[in-house]
Length: 209
Image (cartoon, rainbow, N blue to C red):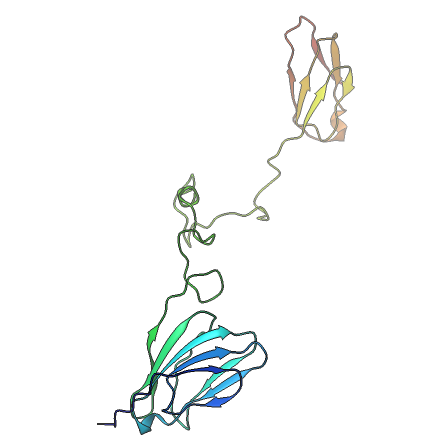
């Protein structure tokens, strides 16, 4: 069995490249001014245990094993702690990592995090026709299958002539009769809805061209 050489309880702030020794235990990594490269001792020398907390990762932070030793990939983010221990042979393992809440990559979401859907948003995911899935995806506004579903509505209160963009015409004939003059059929096929909106006895006449 490998010698037990668990490192002592000391705290050191790292702001530049450093080679670890068994005389140190806990490290605060501050890469605000420059990149920090942390070189580990040979895993075979003993079962070291090192604790890290990232203070700032503005610049690159790199954990470098000795020789052919291996260190797992770690997402080194601020305010998160990691404990790495050697197996006494050739590997370093993460034996503890703090759960950090926040909104940046690598952090966990909690109740007040905007990344968590509200209950109303979850309810809306059910949709109105089937359950969304890979085989039943949502349709977005840019989908070419969607036409212009927003009708053009105009309000008229006097004689007027149909416009090619008319979908719905609301005619207020309170001041007198209104003639709504249709365009020639030669101008194209269209459909338009004309609705009288007032309660007077005046009339709205649809006049063909």
